[in-house]
Picture 1 (cartoon, one colour):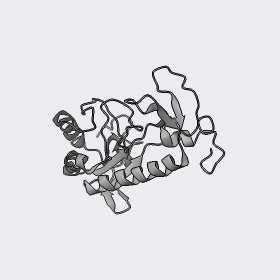
Picture 2 (cartoon, helix red, strand yellow; picture 1 turned 90 degrees about the horizontal axis):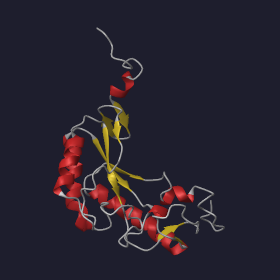
Picture 3 (cartoon, helix red, strand yellow; picture 1 turned 90 degrees about the vertical axis):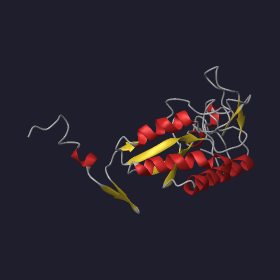
Amino acid sequence: MTQKPGEKQLRHLFEPAEWRRFKIKNRIKYGACCVSNYNTRDGFITERELSRTKVIAGTGCGIITNQGAYPDPLGEGKAYFSQVALFDDKFLPQFEKIAGYIHDGGAVAIQQILHAGRYGGIDLGYCIQPSVVPQTLPHFRPPREITKEQIRETIRQHAEAARRAIKAGFDGTEITSFMGYLLASFNSRFTNRRTDEYGG
């Protein structure tokens, strides 16, 4: 039998794995991404987006991560106009459907929580970040330094969004911490110039 290119080197990708209490059918993960913006401006998932997600759920991946949801009612963490939200229980019915689709496809369901930080506040006139570092691109909002009280509230909002995701049937959550989003900006000395306990 002839092997396909890379099949020998990548054979472990298609083998089952265990992750904590989960048995995963393979080691392929579909990463969270928004390729459609098929959501409403106020954070609800539409039928069109549900249909797209159902297709993704049937791809055969072992783990599927749903698109990033912003966790705060003000929208300071909102990165794009049609980003989904998870700051209130009113959003749960659509998330329950998505978790169900993913499980029906035999995959572990993960919900991403995405606070955009310095790229956020798309419906506002500002964004928040650890320190006031001027934006280099003109289409981003002027920055405001996040206060200690706001940091604690943002942590609480992330925890509440994670709780809602689990309530909706997801097996776990992940917090976006790359590409300059809020958590990543705390980990960078360029964007975090604080001298308090949250300093970089």
